[in-house]
Amino acid sequence: MTCDPNTWHPGAVGETLTPQELKALPAPLQAIVSGKRWHMTEVNECGDSRDAPSLPLTLTWTLDDMQLGYLPYGSTGMRPLNTHLASALRALLLDISARHDIHFVERTGVNASAANIRLRESIGIMKTSGGGTIGGYANYPHPSGFGMVTFMDGYLPQSMDYGRILRHELGHQLFGLKHPFEASQSTGVTLPIENWPEDSRSTDMSYTVIDGGAWNTRYAPLDESSISRLVDLDAPAASHHTPHTEDVDTHWGVGAIGFSVASNHTLRLHSSQRVMATLRNGPGDTSAVPFYAGIPQGQSAIFRLGPNTDISNVDIRDTDGGVVEGNDIDNEIWGSNAGDVMVPGLGQSTIHFGTGNDALL
Image 1 (tube, one colour):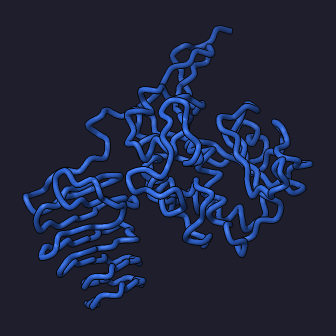
Image 2 (tube, rainbow, N blue to C red; image 1 turned 30 degrees about the vertical axis):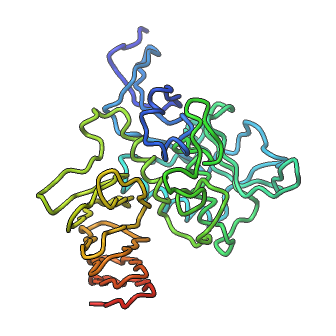
Image 3 (spheres, rainbow, N blue to C red; image 1 turned 180 degrees about the horizontal axis):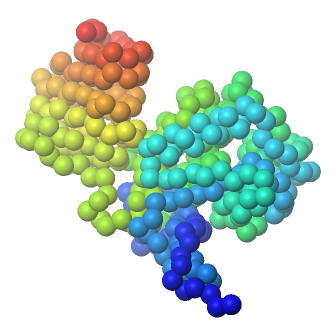
């Protein structure tokens, strides 16, 4: 029987980015992108393979397959994830899929062994050579022939770093994100850089936790931006998320972007993704801070959220009449030490006031 060279089937494979592709990323993203990612290909019935950049990224995963590529860090075996961690994993994958062009397909039973990524729990506590306990381990790229994520024995929701550990290990395995203090061979870039601190305020890939380990499905700002760029790497340059000017007083922004604010402007965020926005005081000002607006006194900045946008850690500094305006979902709005105006929408919003004379409308 002859094979059919014209029948193609999609599949995801591991891929190494070129040094040129890495260096094309913004410097803060170079600090957490390792250069490994999943990439779509097509294979025909004759075994031929070709790139398929037009296909949305589809990754298969399983909780059922316990075959061992190797046992990391003193683990004595593998078992299925506990129900709490499995439930949180599914919630995280759903959230990632909703905000990025990625499809996750669970493989079960006899189909489990063909999954791109296998997730399981360690039997026995994993420890470093120095005796430290390891909460999770992900191999990237996958030296055992498939992706593998192993979580510490008995991780439960009350564990302080429960949510962060999950995001951290999947950041490694799904997107090839690295620790921000480890320089890649291609770029040598690490955090801190450009006012991005080397801690969890910038990336869940940091070991330095500033904001605790409360469970949520949203990655930190640099992680979100890296995911968008890695998934969209094959698209034409014009399709990448870039700001455009709607009129002289309004800037629209999506993704990891910076705005120069020399007069009164409105920053309208209209994406279903979490937006990482940086406002600068004016042309040539390099003192911008992520999620912070340093607006000259006498001018104002309005953060206005679109229908599906999530924004947090907004701090409007040194301004008269700064306005943070929510939408009709559950917003978390942060004020500064100046006189801010907080305008929550119809959702169940959480307002963090600064020390200035703030107004809640």
